[in-house]
Length: 331
Image (cartoon, rainbow, N blue to C red; front, side, top):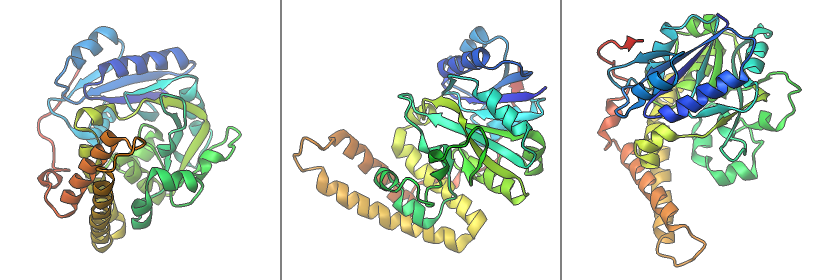
């Protein structure tokens, strides 16, 4: 088997159906399998997937394992020489998988390969390549600074603006929304880290791949549409995702830079959240028509939750990363 494509589903069966249909339409000349891990979706996902995609391998978990554990589970059932971890809300509009697989196979020093991700409106999704998090780039992270200084090393996005001529460009990390890895490398680094329930597991994996001497690369000639964030939106949107992202980054920094640096990061997030809340509190009452009040309120709710997280008031953060119970079933 050339390739195992692993997709984790949580309440996203229509997206999975569209994703798999696009894979089947656009991928030729490869021996591949599609494995879908359902993360205990409370909706009709399992029934829909069984009816609409009878050719896939469906693994049903009795509980939500999170992204990392669910992908590891799918890998355990896979047989491919290479693995592609693909988000359910992605869609192929060309032979991206063929291009990525050919590149990975012909590049002995490359262990992980990512591609160009596009938003639903076909604009580029700059998170498809990333730099490792630091206090500085997290403190300055925002739409404004990224637009003004898109090629800054702070963001790691420079390869997005370089012609690759069909060759892989080395980067620090690629997005887990579409991440292809050689099986031997995946097993060598110990699979996805289960220290994370959701978010940052792709950074952690890329970091460990580089530590064993393999390259992490980006192939801009392979493009996939990533409709983006469907599962997290259903779980509470930015007010949920904002503090969860900070918690997972805190764990990553603690592992890679030590507890003191991680503590400084938490302090920085505390100070930044206070500043953001103060600015939003001033802007909300201003009767300017240019200001999107709903967007400001959402931002205020997000930064209020991040502030609570930074001082230890979000109890769920202490539960992240605990072992999952009960074994899943496959069909």
